[in-house]
Image (cartoon, rainbow, N blue to C red):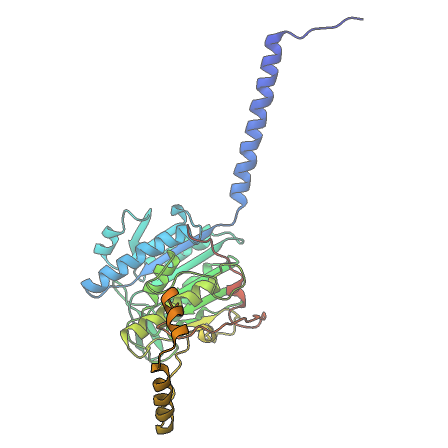
Length: 352
């Protein structure tokens, strides 16, 4: 019997070839997997700021939305488009994103068309509109550089978006009028106001921007609906908790009532209402109540040696008071025909 020994150099070459081939196959598999993962495309469009104060606030909000789009939505810089309110804002945001233009009646449909071509069926597309708008008849006109545009025009341009996850945040005044024309079975639409005469500048864009980036002034982005996940519904509810706290802090009557629509019926709902803190009013005190209170107070003033010794040994722990009211313990089972059902199933990435 003869044994043919392999030359050592041949063995090394063979092993090297196998390693290189295996590594190349692994690279191809990883690249294929990466390509197959759904993407989220994001458009942040800001209208005319109007004055320097709003320009500063809206520019900050855009920065936070860009940051949140990356950390909370998982969008890469290449998947984010920015349309700034004016040239100054565009220059200020130039280093924040790869693609920054100015929001106009021409650039808006062009950008939506671009995203419609880029977003595949299984992808997601999130559109944020922030700035000012006004009511002209039944047209809610978004104030941009050059001619303004209204909800019906925007809805027509948005028809090119055909991916399975579509989210529109319309955060301007009188934005409730945008829900019906945008509504369809695959979209979640959020407006800052009702379809009514809510003309006052809105707090939603600032609350939304801060919460998408992770945390607001009064609340953080959290699992509000207690379903052990962080979803678009949680973002919506967190934003509305922040808006509620803002108006209570300012001691102002709330002039915006956000709406969410995701069942395709074109009618937004205040899905946040069951989750908002309830302010419990102090009961009216009658003369009889005052007499009883005085008697109890007199009894409390009498010294008690055991209580005094106990108080010396331990400090009394006070229950913290939420200045915005008592948050209800809410557990809602959203059915498929209810607004909030689709939003609850669109998951976010938890901010780092």
